[in-house]
Image (cartoon, rainbow, N blue to C red; front, top):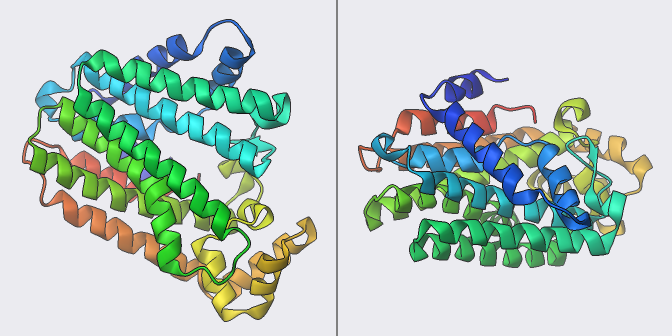
Length: 321
């Protein structure tokens, strides 16, 4: 655990909140039938529950005990889980967090149905808050997720994708859901519209920092910590920032991306990615986005606990998994 993560988890009331979210998720996902069982397996595979934490931390401290925040935290985590199940299916990924994926163990049809089941559970839970604004926030994020997934498919195997095109994809696939999490905390915490909008800007920048850092880990992380083999993105054709920066500097990296990497290509190609400075420069871009997120915190309503949110910013770029 990083120092930033340890400090974040010491935030008063956060451990209680996460426990409530965890128990409610078990109730929502459990049940009879293969789809419910597959959803329960996905839940048990772990995760940091960062998005529910953001819901809690974005709400003013005086109202964090509202049950609506637990429902919203569950909803945003269920959407996140659903996207992981669908992504694993689309990527034909055998492992997620060190465990076999639903696609690997049960096949395409069950994976599709499981993701759909989790999406439905998410919105069924969120409507219990009675806030149509909250439902709109999360549904808008889901539209962004779908658009981002299409962009990822269109960009696959193309070394000419620009950094700006990559960032737009990440803004849709990752940034929008981070933004939804903090905005749900603002909406259900009764912050005004301008404060909630600024929380959304913070969330987008935070999500970009998180995604770039995640893509860097795919190039130089430890598989026993990340839960997946190095070079997963390279093998499935996903063009990430370190790969794109390297492709612009090293024709051999560009050639491997364009023709599609074989398992034997992974380690030599990642060595070239590191050697040309692409990993270092991508990590620097993650730090730049973290700085943008931190700057947005200075504009927030004074009732928001920005100290804890600063720890989140530090944690997303200072992590090993």
